[in-house]
Length: 492
Ligand SMILES: [Zn+2]
Image (cartoon, rainbow, N blue to C red):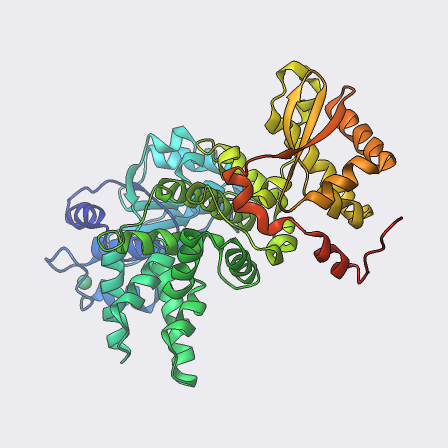
């Protein structure tokens, strides 16, 4: 048994009492040693030697190892019926063959049917002096109160990571393996306090070790956890504001064997282990810890993980320059980024304004119900960006023309689009001269906003900071010609 010191002490003492309690409930998550404890306790109860631990030498201890009829283990997952409970009750009324006690262990006891519990209730209320019951469960809250009130309950806690790691070290050395401490800790963390899970991971590693020599990276992939290099890269991309590389990394993680839970867990661990040497902001750690506990119950854990990553990215990168080549990839992340931002209420969307990123934000449903007087320029901008997005697929050339336009003023029902004097002269000419296209834009905007708008244009005299940050995403006329493999035709 690993850990569970309190439980151990209680059981050791109980085993030597003249009249020990007769009904026990072992509660705790899977793999914490409930069944193992039940078996040791059963042997100790019947051991005829003086010590608190089973001696393994006396008649009773030997019998137990051979398979004693005085020890009955039943799994309630497969034996949950009232008949099963009744036959167990019959057996409990017959004196043991050769030991002091006949011990009944019912695993996953919460799976018993209500009538099965009823059938057991009477014998639990007045157990024969020679019968002991040990109920084990991962879900004690599902055990009826009438039963709970009659048991000695012992809670098995998840095993502490350090303790589990040193236990694994012992097991590994017994098998002739020497594993690095960081690796042992990784196995322990991955097992989340479950001894059984940790041993199963260890076994997998032993099997693979026999085939070839394994690198730490290989072993991490057995565990389904990303190594420090992946986490370190992810952190660097976030800190540097390199959204394009981050998107690529997240994509590769999606098809990897790593569970989002394991990734976030490693991430937290990585950050905490660097806390003394890394001076960069850590304001996202709370989010990660919260996400980790949510991930266990999330029906779509990878998406949740992705949202967290982008939200953290937004949190740490309020003014970021994005290259054109990352556009299409980021477009695919549309909903994630949008969701991530929505969740990060501390971040003002306008602060983040990566032009491309803003592109993806669709106005909320309630948008149309708002009165036009309530609309600010940012909301107009959002509506416009949504329209741009629609145009992009149906009319790329028109999109190329309009992408340089930016709503800068909203007065009455008039929206003024601003153009950069230096870079968007051609765009403004197109905007002004082609009445048909402009009318189409006007209609789309009116429809989107829910009231008739007028549109006009002007040059932006002074470049705003935001514009200069995002100018790399503004196409110039030569760019467009190149894009469409066209030449400029001068109209006379
Ligand atoms: Zn013994």
